[in-house]
Image (cartoon, rainbow, N blue to C red):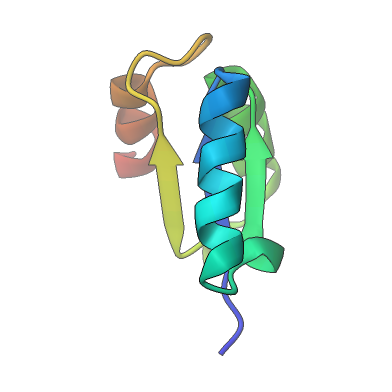
Length: 76
């Protein structure tokens, strides 16, 4: 099964830790990291809803669009 995961974390250590965890369970190729919510928002706006990833993880206090702002965007 092919799927994708978008993860947003403005902390480099957080991204490294998440990358290591997903690598150990064999999912590193499925992940796209974003450093801020604005970059994620722009990427989502470029995609049709049918191409959205199966999982989006957002640091709640991320720079740019926060976790709750991204959630609102996805609900609409």
